[in-house]
Amino acid sequence: MRRPPARPHPRHPSVSVVIPARDDAAALERCLTLLARQSVAAYEVIVVDNASTDETAEVARRHGARVVHEATPGIPQAAATGYDAARGDVIARLDADSRPGRTWVSRIGRRMADPRLDAATGTGRFYDLPPLLGRPVALVYLGAYYALCHLALGHTALWGSSMALRRSAWERVRDRVHRDDAELHDDLDLAFVLGPHARIRLDPSLDVGVSARSLHGLAQLRRRLDRAVRTLRVNWADQPPWLRWRDRFDRDRATSRSSSTRTAA
Image (cartoon, rainbow, N blue to C red; front, side):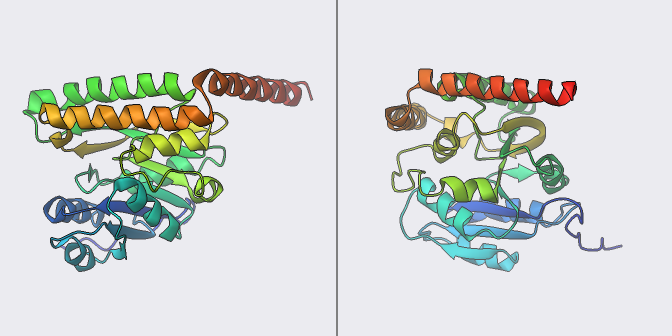
């Protein structure tokens, strides 16, 4: 028997899912198929066609996604264009090769129902590695990413393959992200501009499958490392890490004092 279509959760914030994609029709097909099977429906799915020469836009339309075109190549520009177009209370982000589980949108809504959070970020597993390696390799890779970026940021990083951002938070920083620099990691750049006062939660339940293609070959690894260094250099020029950690400690002290005052009252 055919399952009835899912509906948005009436008590959770509405969730727009943004997927930047360039020449990734095959992976996008699988991602959108999984989004169509969600236990709770997204408010909308936006595919940003980033100057594709394949059937990326056609695949998106066939699955009922709203297609937004971005002619300037580069994930930072494409992702920002998608966030600008989103109309939901929460902007969730997947990559074209992400494979979300059936409750991914529901978990995004549940996590972001906490009004204190600005953003949430998830974890993953490599589905195109041997079964016994996919989860451990991803754990090492993402563990190192989150740990090292936390030191650089003064707070939790964002991971573009599975993350969510309150739309009001995006509107606050949209003019500060470096969307015109294609050689930055857009998710890390966004985490930087949100700043040490932002509240970002790492939520392991926001788990998705991802391709390990970005780790294939020394050239890919070198490119990702170069982009990481560039992202750090650009953002540290605005606020070096020691000032970010100072602001983080100031925020934590203010929060602690506020909690103590409420308790005493």
